[in-house]
Length: 220
Image (cartoon, rainbow, N blue to C red):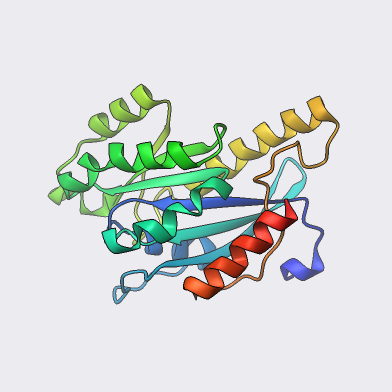
């Protein structure tokens, strides 16, 4: 059954952020389509995919944006932080530098996103534990200090991918539900609960990005 055949109760926008080549696109592909390819190329600009899940009897459509990690695209992706109610902050457990950059990505996210954004820090490529440069304890310690959720994942063998995304979406739903009860508003008063958009692995560049942003802004 497609999304067009079911009633969508909420649409949540989640962004994937982190350095290039940490596996953001593979995590998205694994969660959205249960696919993994060794020939994956670097993301250009911004692309998104969607997946619908059920939480507490409600149908939630996750609109997940994959932001390019390369520096030259930072100005493009940062414009989309504000619309996010969830974020996956990804580093590669085999590359210490990607972990060292997490603090910078987190600062940028918090400067642009909603104060209630749900953040999951993800140490990806846990299947390469023999090449590990960062321990589980180091990742957990940083996440606890910053008040983040934390999980190690492997897009290659699917370890914790489903759990990581589902946890973020469930926590977003809990926040929206509380706001709904308080405000008696079906959208919980959260301007960042997004309207449905077409699904698919679509690369969005300058003109398309502007158009999508305008639709999102005008619909909230």
